[in-house]
Length: 392
Image (tube, rainbow, N blue to C red):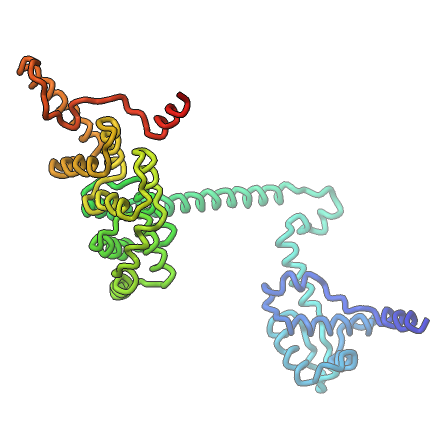
């Protein structure tokens, strides 16, 4: 019962009822949190004093209702609110505590802002007594909607223009780096290298100049594998290296050693695995991987060209190996054949010349020096051949 009586006493003192519109328009009225606190005290004092026959409240009433406030702080804050034009203070009284504080300026400002933001409430007294005419307001709203639509269209156009400029800039940088890679490797850029290049430019955000310096240092060390270059690029991004001096220091400390080379040879490489499965050669040994990497990076052949040489080996001989493929690629390198189309054309031309020579010789003498491409068998991948043998 005692607790309930205390609770009833708390309710009897009522609450500080500050209009919510003050919070909504506080920023526009240039009010800070302390100003809102003073207004809370003023409205609570207004609720407690209930001046039915007079208007305004005095600082003395505020100090009596809110003992936490001091005369100096209340005076300073009231002067600030008066300068903002949200309260009015009667200066006729000499004593500060007896001067009347009027809140009408605040209420007038709030009324003006609410009418501005809600045009339908901005009705004259005559229109309140008659049938409301919403046509001017509807016309104004239609104008606002039209302006919003135009602004949205302008914004979309600006975004599209920026996107085109960005794509054009990115395309120019991509072409510059791609041309550099093709010139250094002597081949057209592969799909895997193209995908990695997009990562370097877009995801990692490297500048064209920095990327060219990094690729130059990689190519000087015969590092042409896109995955190896991406690993280096990620390290540079993680260590926040952005200068040429930092690049040189990184390559000397972390790349120019035998452990890094061995790690690159022993790491998982799908290209090597695909080549081994295609030709039936076990490529798990490091020495055989080094031979593949010699073709791939030292001689500069693409993976597709190496696979083409492996196809010729499988078609021509049953006991061929890396030596046979090495001779084919060495022949192509001496003739500057770097594309699969050129290799196929060279094979067809050589086969036609060989056929012509046999016809001229009368076909009586057996050609004992048959070339690699003089005869072709039906190509069956080694894996499929072993599967057929098990079924038989």
